[in-house]
Image (cartoon, rainbow, N blue to C red; front, side, top):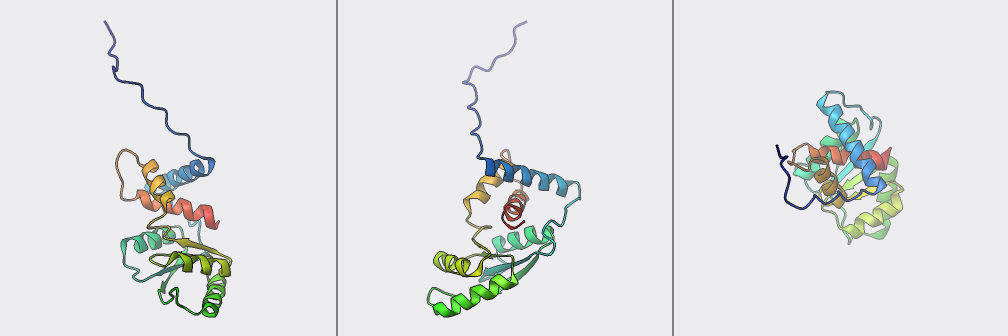
Length: 167
């Protein structure tokens, strides 16, 4: 009896992941398994995160808040009141205050130059759209669930990114 053979070309080997990305993917998978088993650990307990955006009800803002809160972080909404025209001294003062109050700040819909300016003065992580436009989030989400897009995959990928940068 002859065995069936695949007549097509052999599948291309998977592209090796950089060490950082491999670790993030494994962290995301660990978080995914823990959530499925109902054993989510409050790994960000005691951490205070800011969410600077115009509307905290947008999907990306909700994703950030839910991902961080599920890991035990306190997330505060910071209304968007700064702009590139804001007085530089006010930006310096605001950055210092934010650096004292928060362990990290997610900025959505904020001018990138403004985010960079705040990050320099605050001494904490400022994310420029981590939950909305960061290519690492999209790549991790796709690698985490390559066959079908699970609605929860971005949450686990985002949690892995947060843990990697905050803890």
